[in-house]
Picture 1 (cartoon, helix red, strand yellow):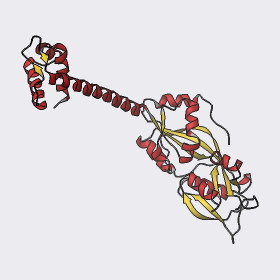
Picture 2 (cartoon, rainbow, N blue to C red; picture 1 turned 180 degrees about the vertical axis):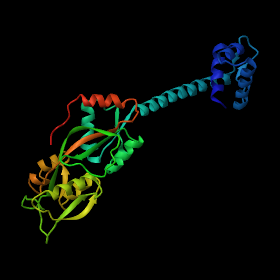
Picture 3 (cartoon, rainbow, N blue to C red; picture 1 turned 180 degrees about the horizontal axis):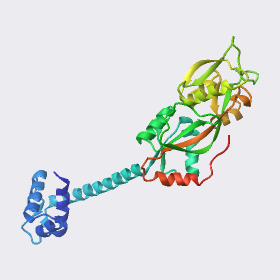
Picture 4 (cartoon, one colour; picture 1 turned 90 degrees about the vertical axis):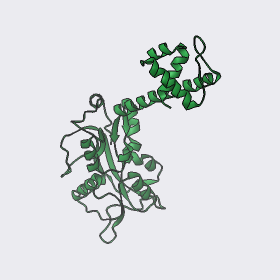
Length: 307
């Protein structure tokens, strides 16, 4: 059975005339009549009383008409929903960002910018490294990439050909530790060569790990750390640090409440802090129809400049 046969039958029930129904369906009368006959054979019942003028539906035909109307209406609504979904997917701008930003920055930022329905976080990217973001931008898998970026130096050996960026705000990595029984930091910087501090670290190939290494090299006091764990996800580092396994550097906006509640405490003073910017990258050759308007909107608005 074909869907057009159901549509044929509905038109026939409305016109009560084979020729008129055939004209409305843009087919010849013999073709139309043959399709109605095939429909009846498929259903195993006579649906049309051809001996009346105008023709009428049999009791079976009346029952079948209700089914045809329900099915065609359901198909029409489904088609409209699918078309709307396809259009939405085409118009939606995909934003990749680390898990910590997706959780602690992106929702409020999208709401403040009025972009909630235009920009969609790309959740497959929450554990990517910086090179993954840039590759995805170049191949068009995403339209925007929001990344932590060093404030004081430029990472070498990154392929940034064709990429432009916009600064959305500032962030600061803070060294923190769990609290001991006396309300002091369980682990305090800088450690010693004989007793290096247990360290919950970022992935060694990631940009944050490189930024921390760069920061340590320029300090007058040497830090002594022993990495117990290396992780891409800030939330995993935060959990291990909170549980007291070691110290770690975490974005301030992700630990403000834990610091206020005394669950975490600074493991060192502000000289150990690392300044970052929040940079929104896009590829200048991306042809997404809505990207240019979103970028123009962002360039005209104020951004979060707090540390």
